[in-house]
Image (cartoon, rainbow, N blue to C red):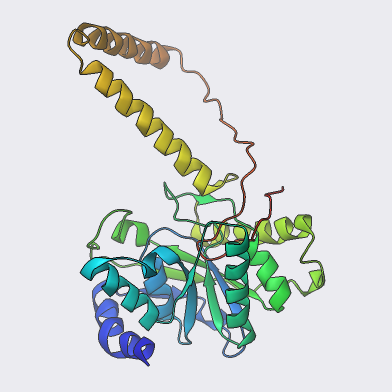
Length: 293
């Protein structure tokens, strides 16, 4: 009941008035029966605007951190997520991941709509990252179609770390449902799961217009964090007494290097990432599945 009160009386009308969300492809929303809505993930607000604009009830598998907060803010957040029917999942992998997968399957077997972010986490830079195969395994085990969804502009309305959103128009583009009935009974074949996941991500790329990166978003985030730590150490070192002269020399050398590159530009060299990465779940990934291309 709380879900529908928020959606139709309290929160929904206000958000529609302020953000004037537009929707393309409403005809692709199944009128009945279970389906997985697989979306790109740009902002926390994706989990608010997508269910708001889909007439039927939609449940997301939300990370368990949202349900375990302390204090007034933590309890309010937990109450909100429970009230709108979101299901907590443990993202630590292993048995926890399997439990999350089973939670999603229970929702689908009740004939409901399940929202999933195949990237596993929010994009760190607005690009579309490699999908995790949990969405494929769930679609095969439940025997349901996957509806690709592209959120447009939510990262500009509410960038990561920003508590109050910027009032602007956002969009939702819904693609045709994808059926994977041809792979029935092959949910344990990791190559089939990767093929299905890549097909879903390709549709998301076409719908969203995002640049695709064949790398997990979590790997990129780890790289960004490592680079930030290195930079912080460099700044700490530069702040020590007697280090200003060296810092000035380094700055001059860097400036000269930029000038030389402008005179004789070099091609950018792409950086690859071949590390194996265990699928996790921010909305589900496959428990314990090693990534395979």
